[in-house]
Length: 351
Image (cartoon, rainbow, N blue to C red; front, top):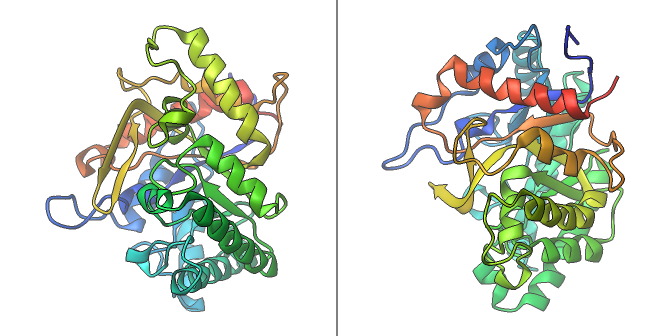
């Protein structure tokens, strides 16, 4: 808290994975080391307020999914030394990172569950080390909408069963799983298929939804699922009332399942780089093409249908993937991001 900023909760986190996602490979910027991402996060400050922590991607070169105990102790010390904690972590469940598609009931499922098990082990150990007071383990279906669409009913059934088995693993480690709502993941590419999947899993205490403001905006446009579009085809972005009504429909359906929340900006287009393709374009918070009034639209996730605070999230995280390294290495970038996070907490936080 500070003058003019009365709220201390939820805690404010930065995501470290923009230093890795979309990086590397021919024509792309190289990864930004975790140490550098931690330094940039810790240095940001707005009106005396700093980031409280970071959310992490459990994949090299940031955090090796097979990291040993000594490695995790060193990670905890590195984060703590900067006055930060760790919140949610991302299990690398995709085939290029050692996992497998959740809609494959054979080898794909086994590889997927192996990565979930490893991710939950790390998450649990970081809690034991005292550096991770809250957070979830993030997953997705690790299959494309095209593969899913070849047999939607069977795909949905297999993904739900994979997630059920993943839930049992998470419970063994005292963890919860958040399925990321993003149009590039089969069975999760539409708000309706996302709700259907969560209902099929039927484990609300263990498996929930991770809402990212940039990705979920594309749900209203029916990207990858035209039949589930909420906004009219002739929609104008100047029509804020229609946009708010669409977001109300969306969030009323998904808010009850939401256990992890990303503040983000989007210009209503898709973008991808590296192996992470055709997903919601993350914009800088003050991008003139951004379609979201971030503090205003965050309310649809942080407040219930009657406008009351849900207080469901101990922390919220900024997510902004695939910015050029030249942008990410500027301290002002992170001050601008933190300022928007503070504004969200000013409007929708508590003590």
